[in-house]
Image (cartoon, rainbow, N blue to C red; front, side, top):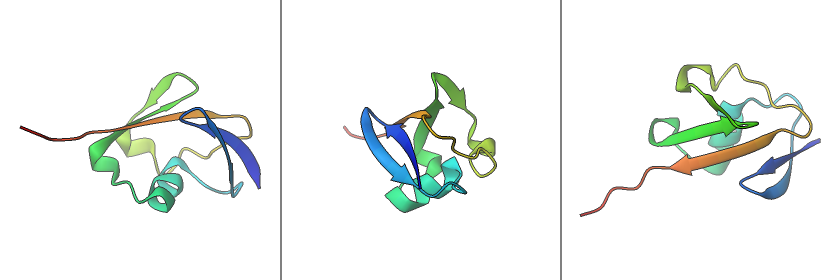
Length: 67
């Protein structure tokens, strides 16, 4: 396991995980969120190939609709 920071909290994840795997584990559809890795936006098309590294700082912002 490796440790990352996810939205300000420490989290242990599998070293082979990508951002796509992390989103799947969290139950978040990548169509309705934005992901930043180490203060850089990761395009949705790259989520599956962007492998997490020890110490990565991941911020996930989900989109919420309302009226």
